[in-house]
Length: 115
Length: 105
Image (cartoon, each protein chain N blue to C red):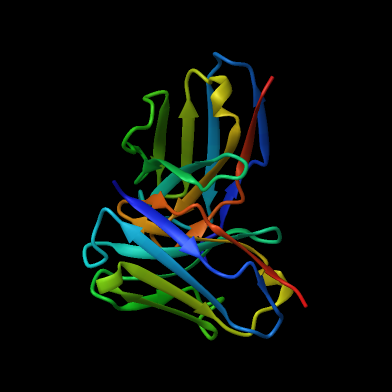
């Protein structure tokens, strides 16, 4: 069955880089777009960016200068890296599969940005 | 960016019909999707492309609309439907509404 699971640090210091891994099973990353969405107290649900089935990426302009999405298809993993973190980046980060809407989501990983 | 506007909260009694609205700041064709989120859980896809029921979702849920005005209808509402409902457009990038919190009386 389709499963997605995010793993990452619970706490990150301001100005540092956030790295989150989304490990998927039950489908191939070469067949679907994979999305990253976050949910913060200040802005609610925010689309961050995606990686296409072919491997190219697209980012929300709000994050474009500090966000990178990549993948390793051999490991069934998608990666999010965001630098220059601020306290406002505190929230839950989700990966989701995109097929006519975001049809499967991971359980999310809570990230707190604090010194 | 396309802004999606939802009413913040609704309260209904079990067995009633409820409509949740979402208004887009510009046309999104039928590229509107609806999600249900319960506390501590990830969002769950209910409706895709305005009116299509996602797999495994009860037929009590339905969606309609095109252009800038969309609605999610639950009929009849059940106690388990207490949740926040989000709309999301995928016509011009992706944006989410702020959510409508549905409470049962």
